[in-house]
Image (tube, rainbow, N blue to C red; front, side, top):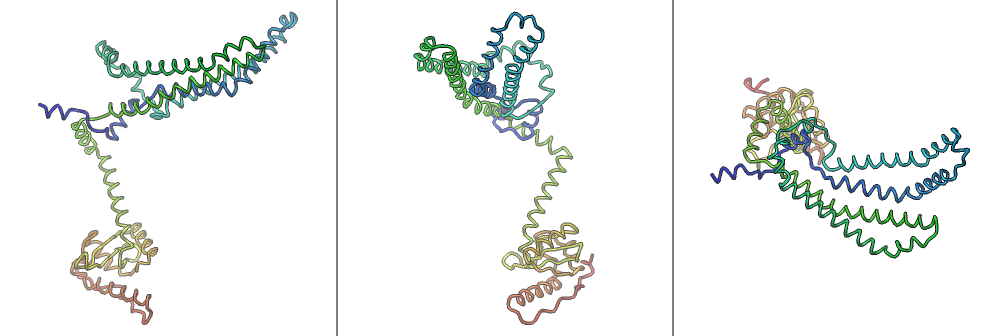
Length: 377
């Protein structure tokens, strides 16, 4: 009974397929605090940057509105010009600023978890309409976390506001003693900087909330050992998955094979369609063995790598075909091919000695080596 309970505990990290399925349902890590803080900080910095020019525009508009003559009030053209000035001086900058904040809100929402759209997320779910499930959500761990975050946000912002008011208390009192419009500008500057500092305090919550949301999302996606076994059975049973796995295995095996070509003593070729890399190392095998082999494009690649690393290439079509069809990778060549391969290796070793020390150039071996009938292809 205890073993059964333990096996059902979600102790295993989510598989890539589980994460993909969750993403299709719209279940990704999100931080509301990140989006909120990004918007507030952008708004604060934006007001600090465009605030002076926006305030000047507002003052120009208000001055114009409060100094209109009776004739201008009843003149349609004058009213139209005034409204166009309002639109140009205030409406366009404010609309652009709002669009900028909307973009920041979108960016802050997708920076964690990415852009996702799932129709399943909008479909009605029975558990959301269940009052018992709703009651559990209200008093569950997630609700407690949200309550804690709310209290923390209020406490941090309230503390920061208290510190700011204490620090700027004398400056606030002296605002009423100034003259227009200087005291208005001073008040706006003070307000903007206090707003920036207050918004900056929300970064503290973001630094805590983002790692928590990632951890909580990963925890919710955890799987039991049985779920992993079932998923493995399902994926292994799909033909396309098997095909993809086999393709990846073939590609990995081919990459490993190509990496061994520079270590070969000789490349026996057809000369165009077949290529076999042969190595003779008495410390590893009693007979010459195959490091790599291939036909057509693979054979071309083997020859290309061999040329790059100065590996000897010998044209012996019957021998190349025989080795290719009778010997696997890392397998010793058949006994019936010992004589032919020995002649090729002897020629290669003599050629290598000639290239290093000079002397008489070795006689090329015959193209058609003696191959037993049972090994001919």
